Image (cartoon, rainbow, N blue to C red; front, side, top):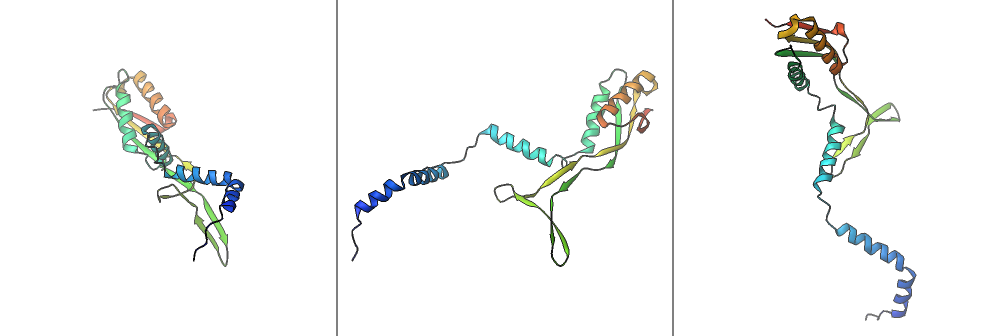
Length: 170
């Protein structure tokens, strides 16, 4: 047979642990609440993820097209074509964990990004460096136009003047 609970003991236990019980109840309620789907927060999260991916998303052809469009806007340049070459491509330096057992072993450190997604921990981002640039444009016959194109390409790529070639279009 079951014994009846001693209400006096239950009341004493509740009064003794009332704050712990309150915190437990609040925690359960907070876990039961739905997550916020604020579009602004979602956009911020996507922007942060895109900046984390940044190097992998580098688009050389897209940069060339954008530079062509901007150079064509400079007075006297006319239509422009751009070819950029890279000395080094984009890269990431990942965190590694070195363990010494029978042999030296290196493992990439992985962190959970939520929703079951795991990503390596990036220690450093190495952006591409340019080796040279070729610009072919209608206005390259003018020294003033060549100088403006040279300055613009140098500003975008950080190349020196001896690494940029500007030629007249046929």
